[in-house]
Length: 373
Ligand SMILES: Cc1cc2nc3c(=O)[nH]c(=O)nc-3n(C[C@H](O)[C@H](O)[C@H](O)COP(=O)(O)O)c2cc1C
Image (cartoon, rainbow, N blue to C red; front, side, top):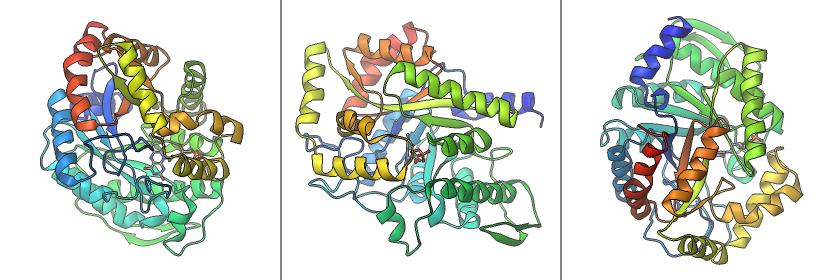
């Protein structure tokens, strides 16, 4: 399949490549507190039954993707943020059987799973979902989580080197048969994998690397880079940068998506109040633990930068907040589209209740604005 044929195949068969100008997804609903590090009241619970209800609403509304958080332990604080978290391959497999169109991703830490196991599990979920599975490759910046596996945490850039080799083995298993691999981290003798995935040449790959090593990994290996956006200007620079690296260094195209919390109400005042309420009820202890870990471990942010965005972490995991009336939320989505963002994975304080309102009030306006068909 040449590049044009591949694009055509994907446009027809793979939802994240469809013709919607602004793809829509959900982020983090498999974990306790989702993307709000807060005690703000909500009916949201990270149970399978509740996730299923949210997933089916998203599927019915025509959303393109569901991206879970890969998490093995909580961050502590008074919420033990994200501590109660469903495993992501089994989660994707189960939801695949209960949905029709939406893509299910698994967010997989490369040091916690051997590439043969990841490739096999992924190919299996791709079959269960009939070609609706994708992989979010993460390297593991939460050191206590990685140390729980009894392994020494690698330094930041080595983690991406490891991920690069991990990814090469996975891709070979998905597209070749009977190969040997001798690398720095892995040795595969007579590599064998059946069934191959449904999607050709392999399932959709995403990554949220933001550091130079992370962006380089994304530009080389995956279909979409997920960026964190603080200001639209910085978002545009980050998006342009990863696309430029992909073109210049690897002669390929990459898409860019992002994420953020939606707080949408009939009036701006109500929406702002609801946003302030999440922040006021914030678990600052867990937030400090996370910011400290990110500052030390991820290599992407300065300490100052992190403190400034503490509120954005409490209300939306450091994503781009979309707060206001349905019209204002659509204006924000239009601005994101204008800087080159092709999709947003959304979070809400109360996913199950608020997605319904989003479907009724925001999506028709997105259509009018030309962001959705
Ligand atoms: C949308 C999004 C989803 C992410 N999901 C996870 C996750 O589930 N588990 C995890 O350990 N890290 C996750 N990360 C962290 C990224 O993989 C990455 O480490 C982070 O953006 C910092 O970039 P860097 O690794 O290049 O420094 C996510 C980041 C973003 C923006």
